[in-house]
Length: 593
Image (cartoon, rainbow, N blue to C red):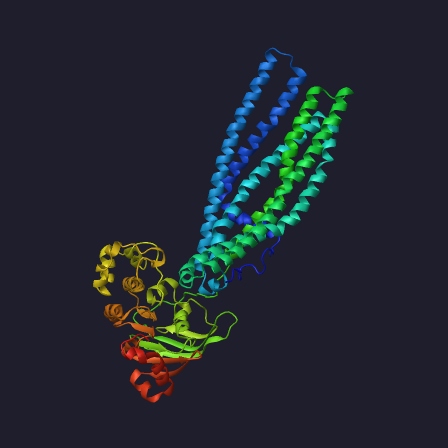
């Protein structure tokens, strides 16, 4: 069971781009929301002014106020500053939350759009759990940079204002405080180096853990069948322990930032108390100015530590940005030119010198040459790995073939618009994919604008009696992946979906392999109606399929080795006769092959 997210990042925890490049990419996610972010900055600026006003007013009050009307003005100023602080803080929080939500929404939309755009080869390399983690967890971490940056900007403005106040009140106190700043910077730089790899590792481990859970849920039926729940639990325990160890290490790094900086803050406060106290005793500083200095240091050093730790925390956002961008930047291997208009009346197919291999493996189609006239029903026969399903995958553009040409009606398959090609082909696989919805909604997935009458017509076209066996007819829930239906019923829903789609070319990949003989009889009439007048390619698994085909193609090693009718090949081709006897002799007695 593999949890490596190959194809996106070559090594867990290793960053592939510089900080500057990632910041530039991060801005691409934020720039569409720049006006909302500008309002956040404005609210922060006013909020910072109101916060910095409090110690200044208090310091002036200690030195100049002995009671009377002046005291009331001080109290009024403090109340006004407090009210302004509350209003601007509320505005800041509201605007920031809205900006974070907007960035998250757009980042998730872009990530999901990219995930849907990828071809099958991408998902052969990358686990679905890893993709889910990038769309959910990493986009949230990315958008959290808005919050982090807003807080850091607030702290930076506060540091600038309070530093100016401190320099104005007492340059010696400001000079004393400046001695602490290099220590803060050195501590921050040290943590930055540690945080860089830790953040990436932590996010990779979350993606791997999600993949582990998803695979466990998908395999639960097999686990119960073989009583291997303990094995799945152990696999999860190993992955969970790995994520736990990485999380602890990550928390130790990030948890050590603020305590270390708190020590530096305490040192700065002690220095200001000592130096300021001596200056007051020597008459070089007023008590109010000393109080102002202490307040300024308290308010200044905390945001200074926040600024110092910013880059370490920012690394988490950059790591998430890189992971999200790895998904959004991924390009399908399948290339589309979409330049030729399709003549839907001509559905002839031609394969010339086609080579296909998956990844770095051997060719599964090796110099394939085949022509299928429009309207012909062709059965593909061959042993496992001979290239039958791969031929269908090429037509559906699930994978990119490396060389050769494939044409439909004389038009290059690559040049046909994807939307037009989708209307052209209809695929029914051995294992149907159903969504957690009703039977009607699953059928309507082929054509969302279809009305109830069209859905019912498509369902009845493959056999009227099967709907009567469902408790609620078309409104029967199918459950997750169709678990509430039998295997045969799931396939019937899938066939009805193709009926509604009404394609010109039908591709059946062992579509009746998992259906019992009685259900097959129900389906066969609908299949005959569906295939009549349409070009059809069938990966054969039943005697009836082979016998009913206009033509049988025998594949071996990714090439056509025999081509003819069932009757002619049975008598003239020893390899076909042998394969037929192995696969279909039981079926001839009424059993499944």
